[in-house]
Image (cartoon, rainbow, N blue to C red; front, side):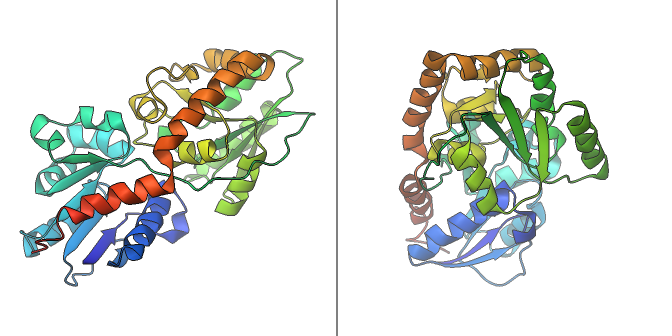
Length: 319
């Protein structure tokens, strides 16, 4: 099939949407499809459109549906789609109705949808290849935060938690991700000066992120909104346990009974879990055991199979 894959963020952004689009394009090409990845549909004919982000990709979704109303249109819902836009934005809501199929990136995503929409929804967990662990430091307990400095990520919550760590703690936090606004960069510089356990390394290449991850003891995701974070897949691929904010998107990734959740915006409780992960081998072992169980859902062969199956549902009658 000729597939046009729409992502609102191109290669230069190096964010989760781009990595998803690049990975999915590869999976589909390996299955024999012709795939064109575009930020906005250029109007060329295609047998099927696969669009990431109901609101940001609306112009492409609407144009394709108008020109080819009977051709398959698949819309993948992100975190801001699921937990904000589809509840208040008319464009995002219309995208849901125009789509012949919806994709969510974790099992709880379906809960945000009306029953007639849930019936046409598929769950596809994102994935990462295995990341070989490297020797970890004995002098520090290395904790990573991965993600651009955006309000949805609550990016300074982990830094604030370091103020509540005991004096003997060897925890050091490295935050990898660029600032999308000048005020965020200014805040990051200020926080780094006030809280010496936390450092901001800025926007770095993906291979550098993976290198840091391979040596980390722990990763923290403190977001207030997530659709199914790719950084969780990568942490589990590197056998690095995760502490996560207790939100639907993270629970859908890590499971209901995962022991590493903290309340959204609660740096004191996060500090308690950080200290426990550092000082309590049994707790750290529980985190690792649960993470290894969930890893089975997020392997590349699983993601590729589910994606190809979603496309195959339309292959017999592309028009």
